[in-house]
Amino acid sequence: MNNLDQPWTDVEDDEQPSAAEPKSVAPRVRGGALGLTYLGALFFAVVYFGRPGDWIPGLSSVPLAKIAVVFPIIGIVGAILMGNKLRFQKELKILTLLFFDLMLCIPFSTWRGGSFDTVLFVFGKAALIAVILVQVLITGERIRRMMLVQTVAFMVVMALTLRSGITQGGRLVGVLGGIFSNPNDLAAGVASVLPFAVMFLLLTRNIVKRLFWLGGIILMLYGVGATYSRGGFITMAAGILAIAWYFGAKGARKKLLVMIVVAALIVPLLLSGSYALRLESIFDRSLDVSGSETARGTLLIRSLELAATHPLFGVGPGQFVVESGSWHAAHNSYTEMFAEAGIAGGILFLALFWTAFQRLRKPTLKSNAPRELWLLRAAALSSLATFVISGCFASLEYQFFPYFLIAYCISITALVQEESEVIKSESNWKQRQAVLCAE
Image 1: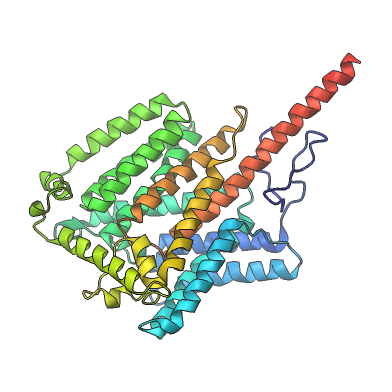
Image 2: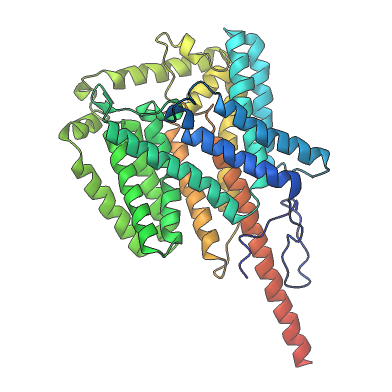
């Protein structure tokens, strides 16, 4: 039975549905207000990742992201008023604690107004979207559709960026604003959605679609190299290893392993020799003619110093750039969170991703589980592993993508647990039928 696209219910992690007969553990469809909430969340994803205001004339002055986020919020409020029980797993509890911890840091911030805006209107919206996504991503189809929006958005932006040829100091920079403007953030984002593209490649048997996804993967690999981002290169390498492990080794897809290795070897050869020299500067700072490697090291040390001297409440959410002495971010999500929110905030931030990883890795999929479910989990695990590495080279703690990823991990785990229970129910039912027939 393929139960991947059947909605899961509000069964808690430690509750076990009845295995009396081979039926779905999710008999109740969550429609109504939550169905509309999903459409609102999908619209927000299109606006946030697609950034139509940056390339459609006349929309640049319209706050589309702020307008789009209203729809899922209204939907979730309506769902609560209609009596829908919300799922609130451990990760969401940690996320809520982190939000309140950041709020506690505001009175001790070096700039209270700036921290208030960062917590309430940036991090708060990201956390709320994560809560909403967990409620509405109840089928494999919905999860895939949300991943599709992100992946295609990054592919299109990378294609437009390469076509524009806009560079800064010899490095390719994003053609759109927001998360796509900075070459390091662009490289980190592309690397994190690469596992989704691999999943879509493996899901389709249509030759045209396969060529589309294969071309998209090569495009993204080349684009990350064209940004000349050292952190992006390390992140992409980590992503390729994660894909090789979760899709290839764990999924017994040797052809994929070979294809990944070939692509990883060929794509760098298409880039100029100056990129290889830039990568060598990771190990030899004397080769870093721009001095950015030294500046990164200085910022890292500064973030650790601020974390040590402000252990309780940090310097305030969003205020590291002010206290850095150079108006730069730390380029490290973890040390920046410790510097801005103290020890408690830093630990909660780390715990959020560790808990999500443990949740997704723990359930065991049966060999006869749907192929789509295997691929969904492999994609989420690979993307999570890639993001964790990218957080060491970019300040991503207030962006939406990591919290989308947390929601994916929770929702996919629910599908894995549901499918395991359905398979177990079918097995028990068949055994009882065999016993009855024998009698």
